[in-house]
Image (spheres, rainbow, N blue to C red):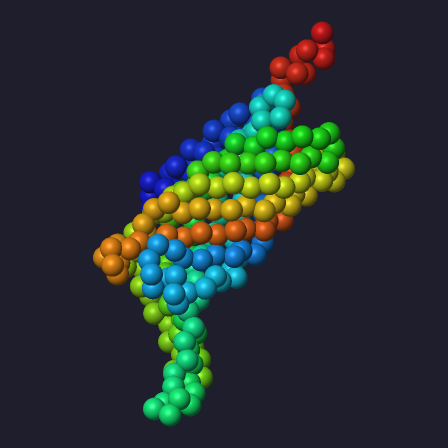
Length: 230
């Protein structure tokens, strides 16, 4: 965890240092997510996607023309939902349960972004993400079921990584602020289970985020400024 926090500090410090001479943005974004688990037959048979949330801070450094690099730190809840019905010997329903498998992560993406447009800009982005697991919980509830909450963090590896891709739009507000809307898909590539999985399977996580952001633009591109003075 200390190494993860130190890495985030380095990213932030580097972004801030460049920002003294070059234009960069700082902002916040949040929104709903659709997440699911994949990698083995049990997940495929009994689990379905779960609606969740994500949100955090981001920093964006602009290179000349249309390219920028975006990073930050975000909280994400990922996972899936399993449901089942209990029957008696005569086939009558005696109860049911709903099991939420919640993975709470701190995530850092590193995204290369390209955009088009003058004031209103459309953009696409792609790159890797790295996540640290804070906690995993199982929440069991249903009819004729005593609700339970279990902490199973020890069953899973502390880190996850994968690939991220997204597209969106930024809308300026006055000179220094803008709103952003983005749809982002995160493909987990790492088997996060720290114990053997049924039939030599794996557990991997996918999520799709709908992010609404608000950002502030500051700093100047000194090179462009000097050209204008000439």
